[in-house]
Image (cartoon, rainbow, N blue to C red; front, side):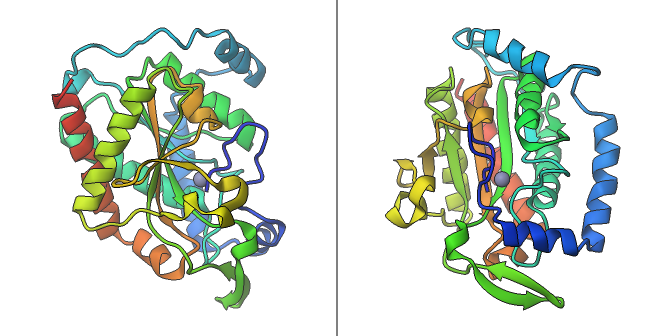
Length: 295
Ligand SMILES: [Zn+2]
């Protein structure tokens, strides 16, 4: 889930989950680490930039200057597909103890490949490293420095700690919640291109719906406590989330996609399947194509 808030990086990862992750380092994590190492070599990040300097630069930036072209030419439309979290600060832990970062990486790579194959040649995959909070400013800087037209941040969902139930998986004490499932989309009213971001999020939500997927509706419920959000589009599952750094500090239009719940035991398996990943990638590419065509 979203650890990328201002002033709160605890998110849904409670102590028991982190402890479980430290005890169990399975083969999937090694594979992910290898992938990450390879991708980091071609990272978008400028070398040698200190986090403080990056943060200052963002603070000084004037977010009201729209950068997006009035017309959209597919090969020149700069899309940054941001992999949520980092290998060190991996987000939520799935019901089977796999880190969210790995799910985000696999899906973001599929989305990037799909967008490129559809003609969006300037699409780039963004992988950041390090601890949670500094990584937020790194990814915002990368998007702003690369003069992105659009940032899509890819995540997978969990639930608040109080909803977790214990079970055993692969000999390890683990946690799950089968109570909720589905994807959701988030935009920030603080983003200088809020209206554009909302429009695109709606298009993505509509494409996902047309694929037969249902959005996660629990974010409006009191049980979600501080994770409760305002539903901006009840047909396509778009929520308002102003506090997210990646949405509010990015100068381009920005949308965060929670692709599905990995704390739900059935949905975790679906999120692991190439078929579901391709469906989501196809829906995103169709939505961005529609968005571009209408500009
Ligand atoms: Zn997340």
